Amino acid sequence: MRYGFCPLTGALLLLFGLLSACSSDQIEHIKDGKKIAIKLENMAVKRIMPADLLRATRWAGDSLTAHADRELRRVLTEKLDSGGIAAALPYCRPETFASVDSVAKVLEAMPRRLSQRPRNPQNQADLPPSQLRPDTARLVSRLNTEQFSYQRPLILTDQMCLRCHGELGKDLSATDYALIKQRYPADKSTGFRLGEPMGVWRVQLQRTGVAEFYTMKTRKIMKPRPKLF
Picture (tube, rainbow, N blue to C red):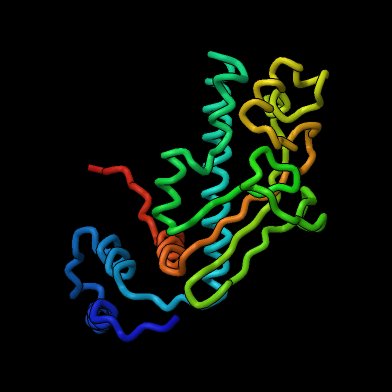
């Protein structure tokens, strides 16, 4: 991705050129000069290379899916405590949460959870074992000029999840499983154990959202300094 010369860049060069041409006793220090210079630099158009976009895709995918996982744990804990499986069952879809959707819109992303043993048949996917290992690295790729893809394993790491996805008769009661089958007749998502992969997070992102996220992540932030006087 290439961009033309930005007027702000010219202004920065002129400013630094004038300052360097003066001796220290001739410079009248500008209040918050460093902060202003960094702000001008951040406003300038930057060249973002293909490798930067792939790096930003991983950052964005990690941020979005981690946020979704946290929201899922928070909501399910609340629902299970208040009404058990019956209350929690409709909420085991973090990709549809309003707070997750808000982040996805900023990133111009479409998150999905896929599995070979899904609860909802719409989440069925053929996933090779190499993509499901707990230590599998993120799979990041550029699909075309405008779209990127992110994927990582979805591992069962919370004891709470066994109440809906554990072993029948051990973690999951027959009564609760009857509720699950009533809502999802084709359910395959039981019999899991802690540490076992359940599927993957797969996210499709637009180039513009990835580029904006890269700019946000690399932006310099001034640390607040205490006032001396």
